[in-house]
Each structure stands twice: as C-alpha cells, then as structure tokens.
Length: 263
Image (cartoon, rainbow, N blue to C red; front, side, top):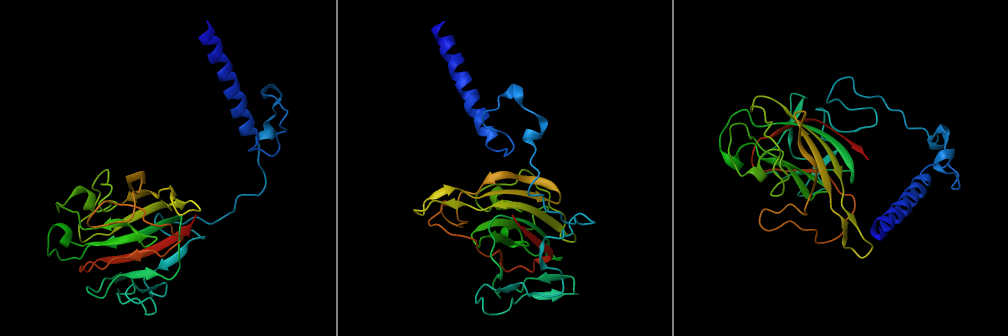
C-alpha cells in the first residue's frame, strides 16, 4: 500500500510540474490558473504572426524565401574550392545545368549556412564508364564537413554506406531510389547543424533528413562526425556556419535547380 501511495504522490507532483512548465509556453495563461479554470484563448498565441511566403507552383521549385544557388544561368553563387578567390571552374551546359570538370576541384558557396532546407537535382554522366565508386561520384557537403553521397547507384553495386543518398561511411539509405543515368534525381534535405558548448565540446550532433526522388531515405539520423574516407567519424573541434560544397571526384556529374532556405 505504501508503494502505491508513494507512486500516486510522485505522479501528482510530476503532473503539476509538467502543467506549470506547459503554462510557461503560453503568455496568456496566468500561473495560478488550474486545469479546471482553463479557457480556449489561454492557449492561443497570436503574436508575432507567422511569416507569409509564396510556395512553389511545382514540386521542386523554390518558394519565395529561398536563396537560389543555381538556376542554370551562371555560377555567381559559387567559387573554386581550391582557391575561393577564383570563380567556380565547372561548366554550364545549354543554360540549363552545370557539369563537373574533372580535375578542376570542388566548388563551394560564397555564403555560409547552418540549419537549412536544401533542394538539389543531379544526374550521373550519360555514358556509363566505370563501376562502384567510379560511376557518377560526387557529394554535397554541409558546413563543408558532412557528406551526403552522390553516386550512380542505378544497377551499380558498392558498399551500402557509400551508395547514393548515404551519409558517406556513416548511414546507408533506407532504400535505393536512384534513377537511370539518362534521368534527373532530386535530393530534398532538412539539415540540423551540430551544437557545441562554450568549452568547445560537442553538445548535440548534426542531424539530417533526406528525400531522394520524393522517397524518405534518411529519417532524422544522427551524423556521427566529419566525413572521413578512412577512420571513424568524430567531431574534433567546434565550428559555426560554413559553406555548402560540391565534390569533384573525377566524374562529369551534372547539377541543376539548387536552392536553399536558412532555418
């Protein structure tokens, strides 16, 4: 009997604490009001009003508050990763998409980002030349550190945490949703940057959700640290916002319709 009474007391205390905590989220709720005295308007937050934006007319197009990183016209939002004082060395094809120039090095955004929503479309080279990691290999790096793999994984076997839509050498995708090399693929990404304490130690790791061609393939997974080809992932030091970068892996991978929203 004593244990039941003790459990009841703990439950009541926890309910009171939870209720008080919930009240603090609603500015119209006086702290002395009991649950029985609540009115609908006490849990209504009217100000500030939610910002109004214009959504895209077609899926994949940018909403009104997006930053356009590439629309086929120019590479003005990008610079060379080898020397960020120089323009991006990749080529634009038919005023529609850009193509990696193998050996020229990766490219990176001029702007820096942390938490974000990113839309990106890519295609493997039309001509299939190699196998495994040699086919349509590239990658998009968040904060210039954490790679979402780009690869031609259409009828192409490789290690599961290195195929298209993997968090490279970290998380395999839930499914392989890759289209053929003659078609375009899309990534829609929600990225949450890592948080660090004042002393530089990790407070919360980065997290990522990825839809590949509209299919959920990474479901709010934890990124375990820097993308490394050899060795375990880790967070060696604190950092803030940084650039988005695209990798030159020696393949003529193509990109189009890239936009981003800061979150």
